[in-house]
Image 1 (cartoon, rainbow, N blue to C red):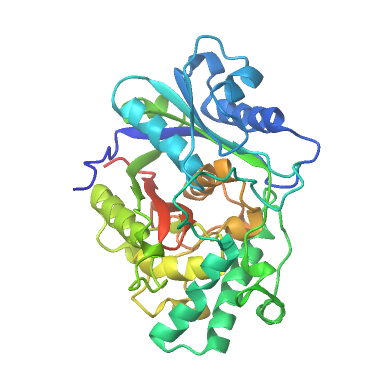
Image 2 (image 1 turned 135 degrees about the vertical axis):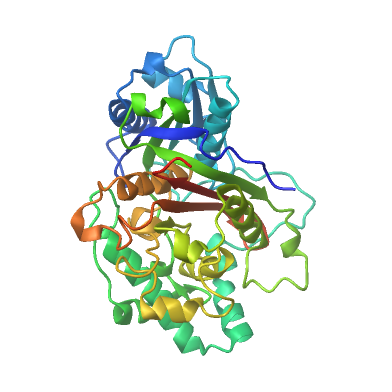
Length: 398
């Protein structure tokens, strides 16, 4: 049985987000201060008025002190949380449920990750003792298996799939080129992307999200109190998190063309929000495009396209800014990179800008003004071994 949900009981009233980049001149403290300062100002509150804090970070700190020290918080509970690449979303989920429970009036969720000073190409995760059956492939290699599996299952030529993946990357780079907070701000043509050499399976470097530093934050309050802080709050309609059992790694029937955890979390979120036709009811979606094949499969797992048809929708431009359902209008992980603790809240920040009409005209979604709901999808892990978070927010309280 899924969650009963907290539909329209909690609202986001302030958000902030740093630029995602190789911040060689800034540490964790500076990134946290930048994101939280913008967020406090957005909601018109001080750090003393926030009752409790949730900090999401994978490896940039091991306790609430990571946040309380730079902010000089006095007498405040600060909970540090982590849940793979869905860490930022986990911080928001816990802050929202704390407010919904009545335990706190005002809570803050903060995500941060600083990974560019360590000399590694991504997070240097500490090996966890196991039973010897863990995967031995890189993340890029694991997700690269999605593309040939999809081509084989649905009878799509390999060259066509290559074009589809390049079209996804090109779309996201075009959006990111118009976003001053994105790390990579250069448009890339489909032809140029298709010609890139492979580095993992058939994936090129430009099929993979970059590595970046960054921070983002949100302040949540009870829905009935939202207009004390802003005249344009976002009301939380659904928050769904599903953790898989890792069985896909040993299941001979798992075919890499779907992520069951995403399907389950999406179904739960739609039930919480009362959505029956996501393609027609959502104004936009921010999805976890860690690799281009991931975004392709997500379009079907999230119900934006029928099985085996998303590739056609991609080529037709259905998920472009001007399309029927804009996806990753900020440029996605592809343009931002992926500071693990911050990505989920960065995605929410784009929904905050778009639904409130604050996104600049050159990258405003085509559905602005006609639809009022946004979906945010954030996953962690690998095909067959995943956690998935889906949230839905809207400008109107039902």
